[in-house]
Image (cartoon, rainbow, N blue to C red; front, side):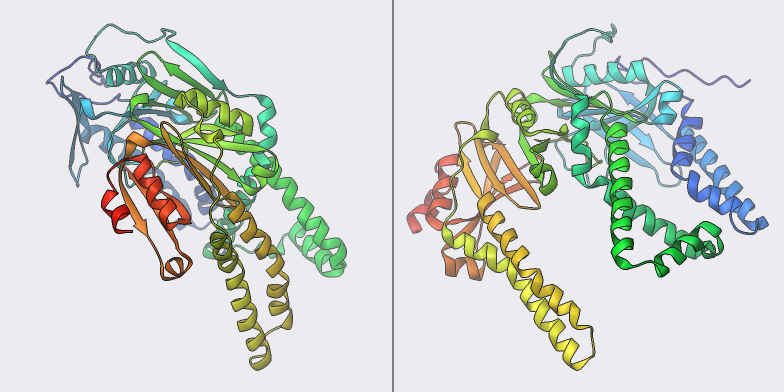
Amino acid sequence: MTEFPAAPPVVEPSHEWGRLDPRMIVVRPLNELMGLLIPLFILMFAGNGDTWRLVAGGATIGALVLYGLFSWVSTKYRITETQVELHKGLLHRQRLAIPRDRIRTVDLTAKLGHRLFGLSAVRVGTGEQSRTATDGVILDAVTAQEADRLRQVFLRRTTAAEPTVGEDDSTPISHLDKRWYRYAPLSMSGLLTIGIAAGFGMNLARELNLEFSEAGLVRSVVRWVIDTSPLAVIPAVVGLVLLVSVLLSLLAYLLQNHDFQLTRNTDGTVRVRRGLLTTRSVSVEEQRLRGVSLHEPLLLRAGRGARLTAVTTGLGRASGSSLLLPPAPRDEAHRVAERVLLADPTSADLTRHPARARTRRLVRAVGPNLVAAGALALLAGFAGWPHWLWILAVCLVPVSVLLGLDRYRNLGHALTERHLVSRSGSLDRETVALQRTGIIGWKIGRTFFQRRAGLLSVTAITAAGKGGYTVVDVGESDGLKLADAAIPDLLRPFLHSS
């Protein structure tokens, strides 16, 4: 049996290069295979059992195993007193280095393959915005104990070799309540999953020339749909879709947010831990936390729910990396925001925007419907298109009016002692509380129609989160005064000129 060299004690500064855990040779292909199980099964066993399918499936599995081996062989790293270095790649070599004093976040992710072998992936985040989830220094994989020790060393800026894993140095802020599962169906994740699965299945069946129409069950369903009145078919289909959507939403909520915990640690970080099959632990330096964003999609808002994300530097764009609270009661979201920011900006009274902004919201909501209705009416008259299309577009005008009014009702802004607060949106209402000290500049924008209406949009530029957060359609003088009050003297020339 081949003996692999053991990984070095990663928490101690060392000028010697070391390798990741050798079990990575098995774990990485295993994680990749889990995402390809269904396509590989269909490729190898569906249809007429052609030999080329078995060969292609076996070749794919073999390529993934070689990928894991080459990844382990070509990857090495070291941690010195000043930086973290990573060299990786076989054909395309990459050399990455991050100064330790630039580390802002540490993301520990353990997929199912990692968990089977007691491993974890460590992603080190800096203040730079990552383009993809794989940018930056990622140590995949190290033991779970070393991963937690790395997290503490990186964020405490220490080089202590003594293990500190297991010390209870955290203060709870929030944890999962089973009653929160009722908000899962309101997130629309189930419907989205149905759409993705249906599209994937149809494309895969077309590519593999699978004939599902000959199956007895499918043929019976198609015959029932054709022979039954639409008054019975439509409610049955809608009910089935809603039932499957609810079940998928609950399943997704369980997989993503199982054992959710939000804590404040004595090392000056806020830590989020969650997940069932794939577990994640994201630690964010509090001094780099620039604010929070309160999201209230339409259905979730109707159920008096919300979710909370962090506005901070150093987080990648991996799904859910900035999550502070999953869909939960709105009051809990406000409470968590207050505990995290040590202030209560998300509950501040907002200043309403001018009535001219309401007109713009209505025009932007209703205008496209009217244009579409007119175009469809012309096509119906001259090209023989169905008349019900333009009638449907006209019937949607009242809905557009309500949407425009709701968009205006949700517009607002406020300036507290420490935060700039802005709110906008209807289908996904977002309230952003941005720390005033995190604002590094302003962008003042006015379209032709905004100038005629005496409005403008003020964007606070920041190195965190999206990079900029906008107060939409505020009065000209009010917008400039707001920016000047948030950061005095920066816009003084514009105020004098106005």
